[in-house]
Length: 303
Image 1 (cartoon, rainbow, N blue to C red):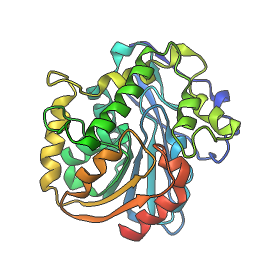
Image 2: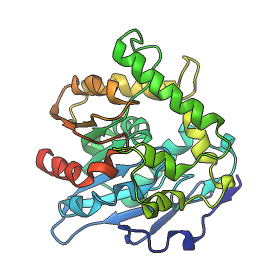
Image 3: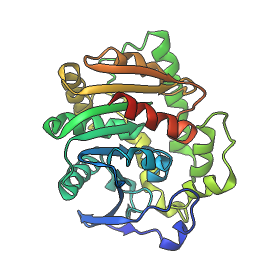
Image 4: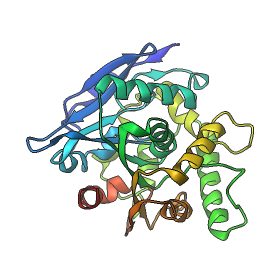
């Protein structure tokens, strides 16, 4: 597998992101992660913060310092994103690749009593991960994500129709754009849209010096299961089945300005052992960017 490595110079002096880099090697790839814990952190609490498409651990920069007051915070960059190595071909990416790397990451870091904090693809990957390794986890913080299963979702529900339309519009744009403008995509996904400062937009562009580094960005929309024959679907179906009976505590934090995932909030809010279902006002799809401190405080207050 050919992989590219973004030069370190691309990440110099990023606003709000001065965390020490950490790395581990797996499957021929160097994976980067943040590993932070404050002086008052509890040794037996770990927050696992998983980003989605097309962001990286930079998305959690506002939350990490607050969560680190309570426990250890791990925020990896998925393969193809952030400071992690980037397989060069779309065909190199699969749900299984990301899933396997995350399992190895948890073993490498010796994480315990893990509270998953997930959004977007962080949930599509992280929820199946947590439910397969359930004894390792202590709670789930579910934000602007879903477990897409075309065989289970009632697409005739008006909410689901609108949500599906929002996702398909995004997928079409992402798949057919010749060179996805990552920073602009993130800026379009906050509230109000397109209001991020140029240096923040630049931080989201930093991992990708040119188009050749964006195979992972291009691959993720294709990995969402739209048919019953899609290779990702069994992971979604197994996670849905386990989630219904999981004793893990669940905190639901969905924003009110996300046209893609907002329809999934009711599904997660209807699960057992939900400690709170909190609507985050005036936040877009990338709610960590809009309301990072508020999210962290809600996590500390409820879990």
